[in-house]
Image (cartoon, rainbow, N blue to C red; front, side, top):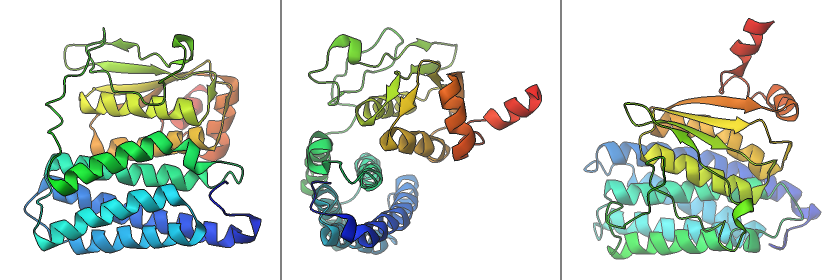
Amino acid sequence: MSSGTGLEDFSLIELFRGEVETHSETLSNALLGLERNPSDTSRVDEMMRAAHSIKGAARIVGVDPAVNVAHVMEDCFVAAQKGTITLTPGDVDVLLRGVDLLGRISEATRDPAADLVELFAVQVDEAVSDLQAVLSGTRKPAAEPTRPVTSSGLAATPDPVSAGRTPSQAVALPAQADARVGDVVISVPSILDSLAAEVVRLQILSAVDQQAVSIRLDLKETRDLDVQGLALLAAVPSHLALRSRATLGIEGLSSEMETVFRVTGLAEPYGLRSRWLAKG
């Protein structure tokens, strides 16, 4: 990684990933509780310490993108603790996206050749900007911005990853609407790399925001993936369990991806194991 770490720092990188995993769970649970009850600030101090710990661990191993995000998150919690700001449900959503970004940065450290600064430049800049808006009290409510609407009726999520990419490289978001909100089918490209994973992630968040009834990943064309793609697939079930009532499933599955789901244990959360047992 161009973040300055090397093989000699392997144990420290493992420690950093462990810190992110542990404290991200703390942050997510506390933030979700705050979202349900904005007046309950009893866990703000706990969240402040969690963000501080992640920042410190990231600084030790030179993972600057994580340092930058965790630092502004910590500032938000300090301000909330002092009563300078009051965290609204919209602010909580911004902070949860920050937690999600820290997790993806952490997973990316598994590739020693990854240039984390370049890989996450856009996402970190946007996250820091959004978090600073929370800190200054200038964040606009999510409902205010006008967002283009797709033919499926879903509001299109701004896609910083696809900027500069040709239309053929963008990932489509076909959907089949029903009488409620809709069944969203997300077509995953042939290679689920870090760029494609970010596009798919944003599409999933868009479907969650629109309260989709079900979200299904179409992986019939997918032949390969990298660590970011695998991290996304692993994170989706738990994210939906916490943030959405949508059911999760697989629309299509290539033989290559079937092998991935079998050997990684992802079959269970996606409901594939019972399907395979029924066939067998």
